[in-house]
Amino acid sequence: MVTRGKSINLYLMDGVASGRIKCTLANWTGVAYKLPRTELDKCKGRDDLSQTGVYFLFGTSDLTGENVVYIGQAGVRKNGEGILYRLQEHKRNPDKEYWTEAVVFTTSNNSFGPTEISYLENRFTNLALAAKRYIVKNGNDPSPGNITEEKESELEEFIDYSKIVMGTLGHRVFESLTEIKQPIGINCNMEMESDGFLLHLKRKSRKSGKTIEAECKQTTEGFVVLKGSRIELNDSDSIPPGIKESRQKAKINGDGILQEDVLFKSPSYAAAFVIGGHANGLTEWKTADGKTLKELENNETPI
Image 1 (cartoon, rainbow, N blue to C red):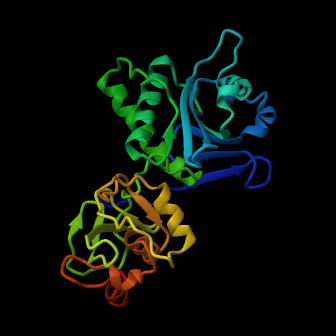
Image 2 (cartoon, rainbow, N blue to C red; image 1 turned 90 degrees about the horizontal axis):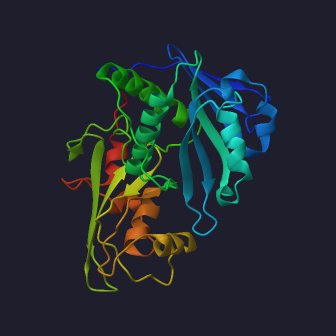
């Protein structure tokens, strides 16, 4: 099936990109808001933010520097308050100091009820957990509730549009590091997967005497060294400081096996991470049939 373009409308409510943003999508009843924590008071009196909806609180962990998210639902209170009131409660909560902005999903026709937001909260939470981009701060797994198959189909379509909007607003909370499709223009015979192709790095380490063997996937964000790769544990004296720090933070077991996917902006940084020292990623990373990344890029054919 052909993937078609989407028309998205972003309204800068304060006239600046760092302020409040309202987002709508053609042929979608949903409405999304990106709200800085410091600007919540400016939203008072907005009818659509007094409705029922689902929200995301985004921030960074002070301890690890990792991205964190809390996902919740907000129903309309007896006092007529909904989403915005719930966000203001979180702002006053000392246990939720980590978040700096919220993303809210509601509808233009106020069609969400308790069943809908429970289902959406459950699905959004599990999608975020599966993607492993953010540390999900939810303490409990929210209940999906009981819905008909017709309603499930309707809500899944809402989720599909929400994924597009969330990425547009700058948070890839639903996308795993390796989910991005194969880069355009690469036509060589490669080891293909449903979401791209694999590059390999294999060499005998002079430092440890062990065989280093890693796999990497190129995405639109950069190069992802894949979980399960065997990494050199010893650093060279000339290792770049940034790579040394990345190796210290990464989850690598005592046998040198990488326990998570790790993203780098360049192939050389990805190779240096694996080797523990300076490396030329264009020649180190190769396809299963031995073509280097440099050869692939030189032979790219525009599509």
